[in-house]
Length: 581
Image (cartoon, rainbow, N blue to C red; front, side, top):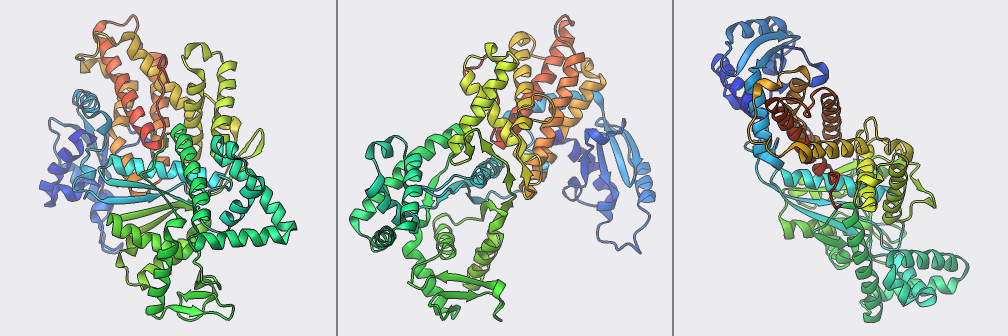
């Protein structure tokens, strides 16, 4: 990609350097707008070509760059060659740049940037992404929200690159909480409330029965007995558990739909109770299982008794733990999906847990453990709704909608939209996602409702506003203008800056595909929106000659297309004015 310009430069370089063009492509990068030298669209890093030489024998990089630039010739693609700090710079023929970029954006549509030579030869893989994973009857805390939107982004990106992706929601649907729930529902439950609002009602029952169990030993004993009945496969207990699970999943599906998220499989810890016993037998057969004085079973990953490397895999009563069930789940998924990569998206507090799980899989003889990857993220502080601490995902979505509606009312844009409620939710979700994705995922950050809803500056509201405004331009002037355009009409600095920025979308996608960080795409889209905003003030369509108006409309249409592509990858549904949301 970069519309074939990178490959054209690589071909000329390959003849001089006697290297295959493929070896050179990733050393040639589009120059970011923020550091834009007037002459350069692409630059070759000479340093990266000298690669393996050690510092003592390496020739002076600047001398090398100058020598190389002198040997290179301009052609129909490259109109100017110069040198920078350790780089050879290439300026593309302006009319060719304009025509090629705009035609490529329109021709490739949602695939623009993904058909790049940077991704050529990329093998199509089977990828499993486990994300969201809330606990039934417990709070859907902010960590689950982050896992949901980050996991959705990773799955979207992998799918866009042509991989076969399976999205798994691994629910916390087993354990002592269901003993408490079963007993609690018999004491405090209402069938009508369970049917109408399962997550809310099960949470209320769970809170109430916990209080009772703390004061009343009989309630605690009854809860323990109910869970034992579940473990032993008692039909009545399992029937109630199944009802709790099914109704909860129904409501999760409805709420995830509001968030624009879907799953291919709703799995859960309950699936792996029996299979975790097989894991324990396998660990034992390999001589890895050690019994403690308390009767629990452990695996010593250090081999020398280092306490920080000991993982408990069985309780004293013989039942499995979270780690054992994760081992069973990984083995089961490998058998079921034969994955090339499995990605777990959870908070950084689980980093050690996954290190131990992957290590145990290795010592159990599963070489594919190296295909498992943990994507950790930091803690969000200060996310509260007006009602207090976040309890459910739906609380967050309702808060987003109500706050955004208030904002829209205060700036008097509500009249312009056909469905204010859904518009508010869509724009508000963009605000939430952009705030979350702006930094390094591993970083903690302080949440601020006021900051995320600003319509100016680097926010999701600004992205949605830019997209809507560009779409409105097409709706107003589009008829009769979008057939052909004259490249000579797009040589103003504002036009060239936008074209240069569109040129590097594939590099940004490549970078995010390498480190799974959405911030590269976020930063790119915000810059694109700012460039479009500045151009919109000076590159008028109304009252311009038809040829000029048509060319400018093509440019703005290309910006909107790439903006929409990037937003969709991030999990944002672009909004357009006049659309029935």
